[in-house]
Image (cartoon, rainbow, N blue to C red; front, side, top):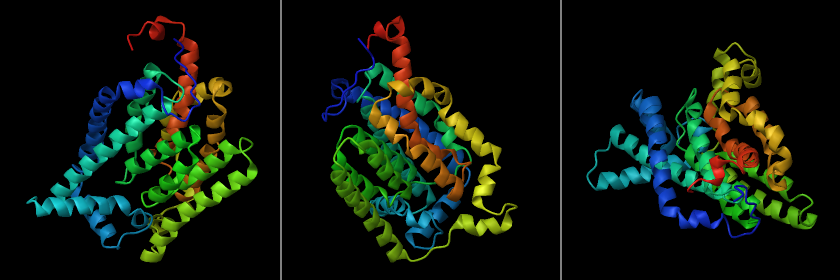
Length: 342
């Protein structure tokens, strides 16, 4: 059986995803618990739970700095869960909040891993899709490099993967709720719009692309501007910190920081070298979606903290498609894949 099984239908992943769903759910939950525990109890909660609680209280009381204040959705979700837990007798303290944060991250990470398998299933069989998932999990510690607590990250990753899946499966109108609900978690979800335009350019009538792009922009702008109108102008914490740094701009600091470039290299690892070899085999829709990679990296060079490895994770699914395409070609006739019990 050829492990690379191109499927351009709108029915979603191959039947293996539905037939093995319970087993895949158990696997995803197990991996999500480990990665969430690693995130919280090593890098966040055990080091400074008071800081996490203070950040949370600042956001829900509209006293936080940008961009966290504008990414308010995960904080309010956790606050609603906390209020419900307190009503049932749980203590209203940082320990309860941290546990809720851990549970929410675990659930969203589980959904993200399942969505990643669904995305891989558009082209690959179960064996290659699992390899892709395990690679993603293996490099997850790089996402914790210079980490600062962002409860919206697992939500944002899930929205990105679902967006890729919708574009790959020609489910254009799925992007409307993905953008609308994704913005309050992280504004970078806007980059699905250029990915969509590139993927559809020349494939469907230009008038259709323009019409749907306008709808996507509306779906993006409604929550984006509504949040800013509701909250008002909030100073950006990075801009404020620049006064105490030796660099003239965020861009200069990022360009001259070797740690950021090292984390970027390690996040994609061997996929940097595999990508050129697999480029010709990539489905056209994936090759076109790669247009967001330079845009994404440029945005973070100019406005973000390039050293934070978590910023690169939304791009990893695209690179993994290339890696799996190469792996499927190299090993499709070997015992490694052809005689696997999967």
